[in-house]
Picture (cartoon, rainbow, N blue to C red):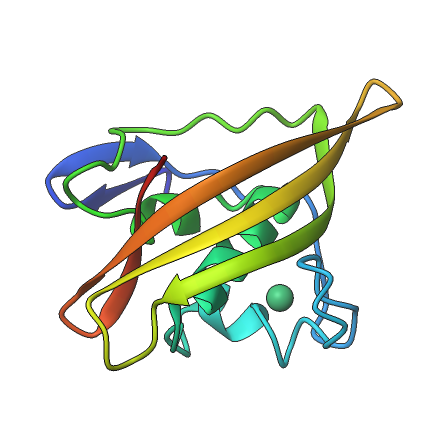
Length: 145
Ligand SMILES: [Zn+2]
């Protein structure tokens, strides 16, 4: 399969650029194994219970190059038609500073974080305040403030 349909928009599906096994440490640096943390979310066998869990899984998707998961976890109102990941970026650490709302009993949530990456041997970071919204039972990434 080279293309998948998602909310009427076509996007190009590419295999993960980095393979992580269940026993490896999760790329989101939670300290848990991939199989207990973001792995089941990326595989679609478990839903993110909170906005923060979705945020972590999206960082992991950036780290392993899973564009299909990034698109699937994007809010339909703001989701781009396609996503080309910059494979020269090596996302290696996530720090979550604050999370508000985003529990299974709420409709919206916000997470402030710093995502650390390496590019051309240099360390860099991105600080973002992201907003999430629950669509039915699934948390989706809405936008960044
Ligand atoms: Zn994780």
